[in-house]
Length: 439
Image 1 (cartoon, rainbow, N blue to C red):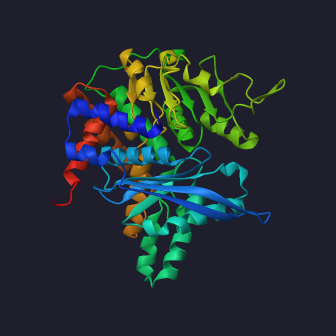
Image 2: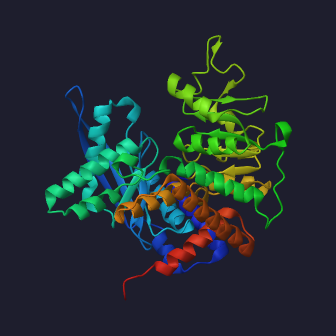
Image 3: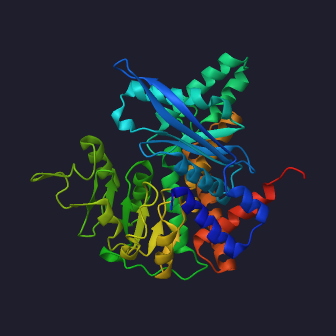
C-alpha cells in the first residue's frame, strides 16, 4: 500500500474497535485541501530549475493547520497527505489547539549550495503564502529542514505580507508565529531543538516506570540496563539517544543515511561523541572505518537494515516511514518500538510485532513533543512572551505525561494496543470540535 493508504488503514483498524461517528470518519478519509506548486529557483550558475512543492491542509476542526515542511527527493503528494493526516491525529493526542497539515519539496538539499537553499526556501513561501498564516496554517521543520530554513521562510512571509498590505508593528510581531522551529534569535522558543527527542524520552520513561501496569520484562545488557538501537541520527534521533544515555540506558547502535555502527560489547555509546565525529567526518556509516583506520575502533559497521534486527530491548526508528514492514517484521527482536519517525511501521508489520507480544509506542504519541513545543513557540509569539528553557521542558514533560496517561487509560478501557488507543483519544477530541454545514 501507499503511505497514505497505510495511514488510512490505521484509522480503519482503530474504527473497528472504537466505533466513531460515521460523519467524522468520512471527513477524515481525505484532506480538506491539497495544493501543488512549481517553484522556480535561480541556481548559482545562472540556470533556472523548477522544483515541485506541496502543502496539504488536512483538518482544522481543533485550530489552525499545523505541520512541518520536508525537503527530500522522494517527497510526493501521497506522502504529504499521510503526514498531514498523522499530524491531525497527533495534535489531538497531545491536546494542542491545532489541526493537521504538512508540506514538502521534492529535492535533495545536500546537492544545493547555501544560497540555492535559501532561494528555494523563500520560493516555497512565495508559492504558498496565500494559504498560510498564524491563525490559518503554521508550518515547522521536518526532514532536512532546520531553524535556519524556518528563519528564511519566516522572513520571506513577513516581507511578502508587508508588501501586500499595511501591517502595524504589533501585527508584524505576530506574523512571526506563522513559522515555528525558528532560531531563538528570530523568535523561536528555548528548548525547541531538543523537544521532540525529550518528549519521546518522557513517554518511554512513563511506559517503563508506570505504576499502573506490570513492568515490561526487558533483557537488559551489561549490568541489566536496557539496550537501545536508534535508526536515524538527525536532530530527533540524537536527542532521544542523548536523554536515554544520560538516564542510564545503553545506546548500543545508531545510524544515519550512510550506514550504522554497533557496539557488540553492549557497553553503550556516548551520543555527544558520536555526533561530534559525525559532524567532523560527514556521516556515521562510512566515517568510522575507512580502510584499516577507525575513529571508533570498538564499533562495528553494519547496515541500517541490520540495525533494525539487533537483539536490543528498545528500537527507535527516527528517520523515514515504512522502514519496519512485512519483509523484516518477523526479524525484529526488540520488545519495545518507540516510533520517533512518522509512520515507520506498516500495518502488516504491526500485526506481526503485536502478535508476538511486542509493544509499539505510536508516532502520534511518541514524537508529539515537537508539535507541542511548536505550540509553545506559537503562543509566545502571539502573546509577546519569552519562556525559559526550563519552563518549556517542564511544560512539555507535564503535557507528554498527561498524554501518555490518556492513551494508556484508553488502551485499558478498550483492551487494545497503544496506537488504537491513541486514535480513540484523538477521534473523541476531534469529534467534539467538528462542525458540518447544515443540510
